[in-house]
Length: 233
Image 1: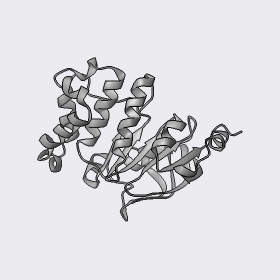
Image 2 (image 1 turned 90 degrees about the vertical axis):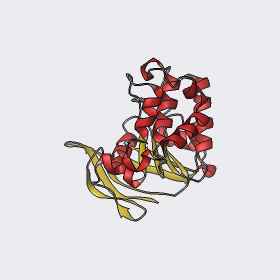
Image 3 (image 1 turned 135 degrees about the vertical axis):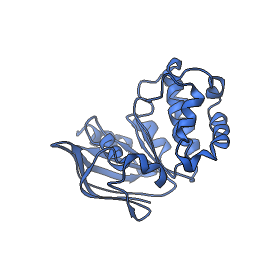
């Protein structure tokens, strides 16, 4: 579904990704792990059009998408749930969800998708009239995920969803990720919790210094070996 071929990208004169090549299978959950500075978030931003690709190509279902403006990525069925939640704090929970279906082609499906969001995240239904800025960290992460699903994306990019959350909330979050991995959408998950990420994934990619150090089916991953690579031991 998603083909990344020898991609280079970075921030101004600082290059971060060095000839990254990946093939992301459709309908599967692929997790990308690696230490800070490995290029994980940079890769998601390059896919999403938030960063220019200086070399290589990104193709979705055979069509090149690098160079596509970020605001048009929803038309291609791509949504990103960014690190740090980034909810609209001065808007209600429900207004945040509605923003997820704001592009014109999604508006007619908004009522049905609101029902789906509240069914998946019952706590959001309880808080639907509440300002998003008053939510706990876990509730805000649920809101960010539900908002991302409002456009029913075929490709969902999720960046560090468990960051800063309490263990019980992380358990709930990964249970939701397991439910989302139902074969109906392709998911790329960037996550620091390696054991939890591998457990929920179909495929695992380890990045080191802007390059792919390992690409392996999750069922074949040896965590001890993975951690040795992760920490460059």
